[in-house]
Length: 198
Picture 1: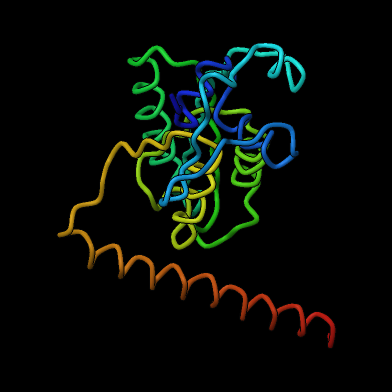
Picture 2 (picture 1 turned 180 degrees about the horizontal axis):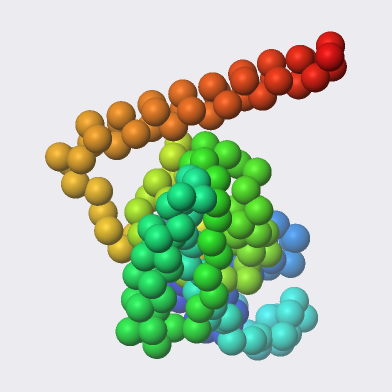
């Protein structure tokens, strides 16, 4: 009998990301992969001593991160609304959670909160990410972060899905945000040059 990676993780008492890491480290490999690239493990080979030699089995950390973001300081009320929406959802589900809030453009990859979130994802310290809208994470790079979450077995929950009728409105907002960021950079560069010549 062959198991999927999720089933194998349950049998071993570890997380899915741990099995993937063991494979990368050369400690434990699947028996084969399907045509679609999915790992398959032999149940008869899932012996306790094999896993103990890799790592002591432990319960998967059930930690949820709520991520909220606004573009500017005059949107603090919207930030509070996002935080309440997220925390209310987690409390209703009885999840253990933490909130990360960011202030900055959706096309800025250097935000402190975003980088903290990335470290938590890559270090496999969370099991769930909750956001209100997809664009709260990033305007244009969110699919990449979602793929990263999928790789590490992190569930992504988007509370308010965007409807098709809001597509044009979102597109206009994206263009305005891009223009705002680049305009600020141009004026900032000119201001810096003027200070140097003064």
